[in-house]
Figure 1 (cartoon, rainbow, N blue to C red):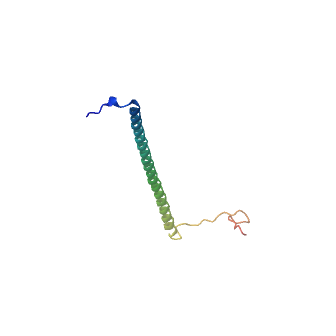
Figure 2 (cartoon, rainbow, N blue to C red):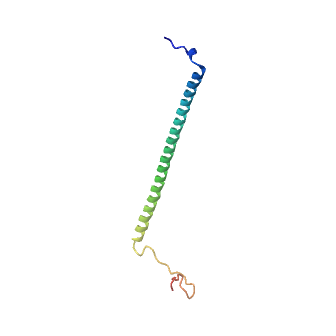
Figure 3 (cartoon, rainbow, N blue to C red):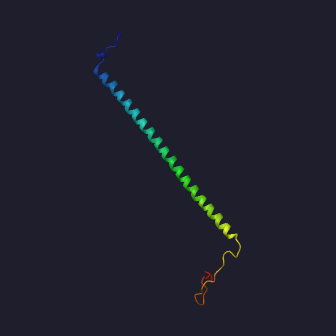
Amino acid sequence: MQFDLSAVETATMVFIGTLVFALVLVAFVLTAGFLALVMVGVGKFAWFLASTTLLTVVHGINHGWDRLVHHASTGSPGDFQGQPSPSTGSYPRVMLGDS
């Protein structure tokens, strides 16, 4: 027995067509939402990598500077000759706050 499409009522064909169109829309929305979530995840991962790299560079610079300052402070006292500071009259150049 062959299926005769002309025997199906118009209302039934409209209903089936509406269901098919709704399924196509649902598939499109689900795909778009999934791709948006993937793009947000990739963006967050890229930001995480960039911020971690920047923080690592800053911490490396700080660590290097600390080592340099520590190395300079362990030198012999003759490396840095102190110079007398000029006086401002009867008061020394640097006044203590509680005097």
